[in-house]
Length: 305
Image (tube, rainbow, N blue to C red):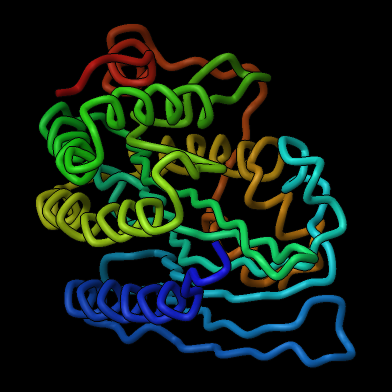
């Protein structure tokens, strides 16, 4: 297993970031800021990365797409809980992660991530595993959007076995769930983590398929919703629901935990946070309202395709 080419994974991820940014810069009309960084040998983690970010765009109120590639002397606890035999091994982790928060409340927030974690054993061999997925978080649910998003996810996984979409769809429903609220974050999508059952080459092929499918999954939805009329009521509800996004990322998300535990770059880790958020005490939507439909018709897990 020592001949697996992690450099090819890096090159793919950099190209994926460039392609996504090009597509969404064209849609938004405002250039994304580029913030490249390097960590030197004196720091806990070595490596480099590049954050691409737009704030106060024409369509995206805030949107970020990160590439990072870091190396460290030993895997953090969050990465070895299922692989205790790799504790203490030097590692490298690389991935592309994005969150786009549109301004229009009828356009859903989206998250996508593809990543590889590799441990380098004392015998010179490499053990790599993969993770990723994408999920959709609407404020005003639209069945057309949810069906489209899930169909693209299903198609991306089809070459890797008929079991992958239903497994990863269920995994997503269970993972992006706020246990303290007893509610889902959104309408889900697909999610997989610590994945190695197809081998390293098969795992790499699968994250390429997922990453390549992202723009087709989300851009048509953004284009449909970006000009839909809205008012202060919709913006207010959007800000309230964005609070759930913050709660999940800070309380439950393993990626956030891994980044902070391993000494990652805080600005990049927290780039997923929405720009305007509200909380209210014990608030409930008016029964029968469009806001209530999100809770009754969209957040409970269902089969979208």
